[in-house]
Amino acid sequence: MSKFYVPIILGSTRRGRKSERVARFVHARMSKRENLETEVLDLLDYNFPIMEERLRFDENPPPHVREFSEKIARSDSVVIVTPEYNHGYPGVLKNALDYLLPEYKRKPIGIVTVSGGNFGGINCLEQLRLVTLGFGAFPIPASLPISRVQESFDEEGNPQEAFYEKNAENFINEVLWFAEAIRTQREKGETR
Ligand SMILES: Cc1cc2nc3c(=O)[nH]c(=O)nc-3n(C[C@H](O)[C@H](O)[C@H](O)COP(=O)(O)O)c2cc1C
Image 1 (cartoon, rainbow, N blue to C red):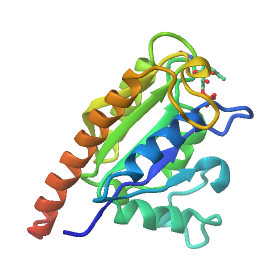
Image 2 (cartoon, rainbow, N blue to C red; image 1 turned 60 degrees about the vertical axis):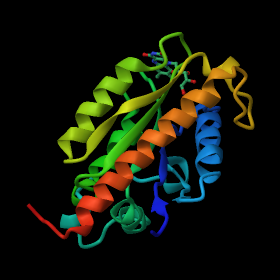
Image 3 (cartoon, rainbow, N blue to C red; image 1 turned 90 degrees about the vertical axis):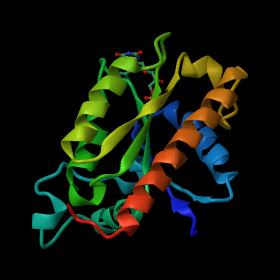
Image 4 (cartoon, helix red, strand yellow; image 1 turned 60 degrees about the horizontal axis):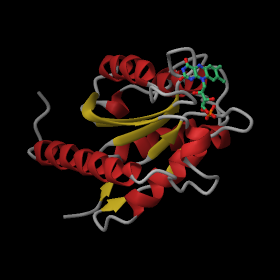
């Protein structure tokens, strides 16, 4: 069986962002899995402009949107690392997600939420789950909420509290379970 391709969208572009630490951590742990190919799709690097039209209706899309689309289209699952802003997700993340639609269809989405407070970004988690249903993907039941990120992860992405290792392993296991289930179904070639 070929490797599962599961890119990680990093949904924070804020100066001095802390979510990058968590993206590094998740990327490092996912990279250890032999059956997984992964990379971070950093929205700071993509720097997409405010969306004026969805990619599939745009003959002259902004730079790199097609490349982003191709990566999501060939993915078996997508992991999103997002900060919680005002109980929701950042506008820059929604802007990037809205360029695409068919690329997400029936893809399992694993959501990692990053918070400066004690609640791990759970409001953001619930909101983003609804958004992913809106584009025909499905959010997996497992999540990876990160609290007080400024203390709980160092700049290299090392967790300062041991339970994050276990939580990440469980989360990645779940992402892979759904990726495999969906691939099996897709390989039947059914389009219903
Ligand atoms: C605009 C803004 C709104 C925020 N709103 C919340 C919030 O609703 N809940 C929360 O737990 N933290 C909130 N925070 C704190 C962030 O979760 C925290 O700063 C975290 O580091 C964000 O990730 P980032 O560093 O990648 O931007 C907010 C931060 C910003 C910049």
